[in-house]
Image 1 (tube, helix red, strand yellow):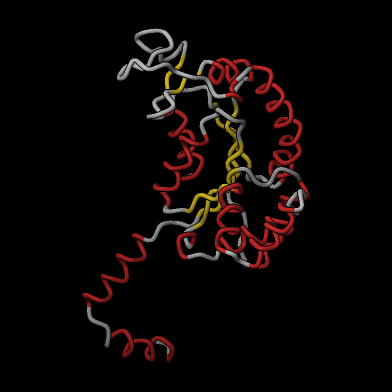
Image 2 (cartoon, rainbow, N blue to C red; image 1 turned 135 degrees about the vertical axis):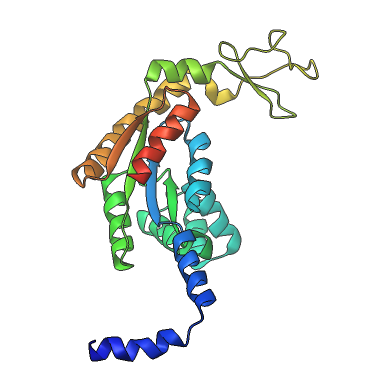
Length: 247
């Protein structure tokens, strides 16, 4: 045996079999790190799939709007900078948003990776995100786009009905209440969200496609982009996403 092997033996001999097995179990149980971006228009099902992915891989879910608010509330350096800009009526710069993401991914709950939702929205933002991660010796592993036809999306969203007090949701076509426009349990009137009307939605979808396509092309060139048919049932979409993330 080589000298290096002989030197290693006493160190190993000093470790009990139980400790070795425990370390092996720990390494096997430790989830693979994943850093991914979920892309999809409002109503595509990101809100359904993100918690499933988060739980399966022990990731943190980073929604940029929530992170901005949390950073401002916590009074972090980046939060203070964002607060100052927002109070003056300006748009928060890419540098501040990337700085807030950097602070977030350094937290213990993000040690196995993260799901980014709502960012990046431009190629410049994607490049700045890549640089920040590269400086940490990391990178984005997967970019998954939830693809769905605009017409189906319009019918999905414009048909949504809400019982304001309980948050119970219905749909005019897919899950109608027993009595039109009335909550099944209380009989109280149902409402439609103000931004769930067709004109507003079509404007949002137009802006989303115009903004998102260059970002999707950027990641496709890197070979980490995949799309999922989000018009399918939630369980089918879930399986498609898991296939992408585990292969």
